[in-house]
Image 1: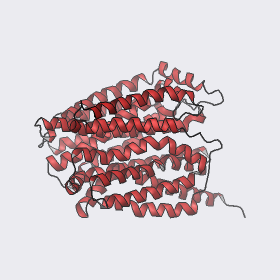
Image 2 (image 1 turned 90 degrees about the vertical axis):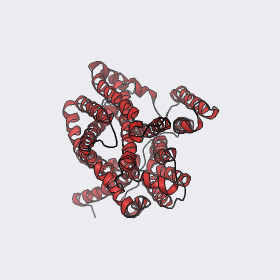
Image 3 (image 1 turned 45 degrees about the horizontal axis):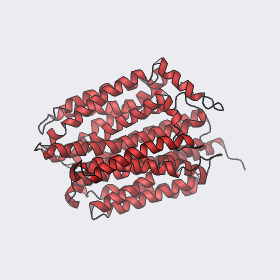
Amino acid sequence: MTTSPTTKATHSDLVLAICCCSLLLVGMDVTIVNVALPSIQHDLRAQLSGLQWVLDAYTLVVASLLMFSGSMADRFGRRRFFLIGLSIFCAGSLLCSLSHSIGQLILFRALQGLGASMLNPVALAVIAGVFPDPKARARAVGIWGAVAGVSIAIGPLIGGALTQSIGWRSIFWINLPIGLAAILLAIKFVPESKAQRARRFDPIGQALVFVGLASLTYAVIEGPRAHWSSPIILSLFVVAAASLLAFLLYEPRRTDPLVDLRFFRSIPFASAAILGVLAFSCFAAFLFLNALYLQQARGLSPFTTGLCTLPLAVLMFLCSPLSGRLVAIYGPRPSVLLAGGGFFSSALILTHLTPTTPLLLLMIAYSLFGTALGMINPAISNSAIAGMPLSQTGVAAAIASTSRQVGAALGVATAGTVVSISRSTGSNFSHATHPIWYAMTLSGIAIFAMGWISTSPWALSTTRKVAALFPASVPTPQ
């Protein structure tokens, strides 16, 4: 008996829905925790650095293991890896809700990050496999992108409502029914698949990435408490620098490197990686500081805090598909320029933040920030893969995703550290955040400039030169 096209389409859509459930979990978990941070700080008697680690333990593990998870899934089976990732994420969520100390919560957040790193790259590969038709695949990826926007957007609202009505532990409970349903459906409906030629595991490169990121983040977060001139902090900065140097020297020697450094000869690709770091460091710092500001400086409830971030979420959700259309017609330049202007304007408003700043002015700043973030996301993805060899687009996209996670980790680490230093001099919380907003205005200017330079004829010619390094491949359309 043959399977009808309608039945095949229904099955493919069901697989897409299952994969989108995993994206909903991972995306929502990025933002849902921020609103609960003051409650976590009170219940677990945590310091600001502890709250930084609650966020960064998750993003650091995801950033370090995204490339590894993708290659391992290609080798051992994407469905198998997807199920393992969902199981680890659900187990981590349950353990987070049972934490009795900030140390336990940080550890279990890292476990969540391990599961999360096994979901998104694998789910995208599964979607590509069940949608062989290019038009159907483009529609599926579009739905995937919309769910990504929704998941990040609804996180603060749901987190605020759950924290205020039930308690902060409930923000982790919500992952369990969604995750368990996805596991049961994946067992029945998601097909197993592997790559025809899986990339070799790069244990040394992987270790250097993790050690470098962890050392740098730890030094930045713990520097104010341990003193910047202390031997341990100085040693960690040395380890981070040495790891980066060793990575740059080692990777070109491998046949299948974790990161093919030749990609960075392409100005648009290198710009996409830098834009990912800049934009998401701003985003992570923005959410982290505003969740604390609205509740601690202004005395708002968790739910009201979530409502205040709604303009950011709505504008981000609306602008993402608009940016996608602009990129398809005009290329990434208009989207990146608008994003740079949005980041600059939003941060400029917040440089004058006080405990009595009018809420209307805050909503304008949040709306501008949401517009900027929605505009830049599709542009980053496009710049990362446009003109690159077809055989390398998956790796290029994974590097762009990693840059976002690295940016998020560094954004939280830097924001918390700067605020800690400012408060140690007697500044109130609102005033202590001002250096971060000034730094974000500079980031907005940098993003604007990169949007112009990276789309110039000279920059686009560098991508064609990189594509020529892979003669067996055909470049993707510009």
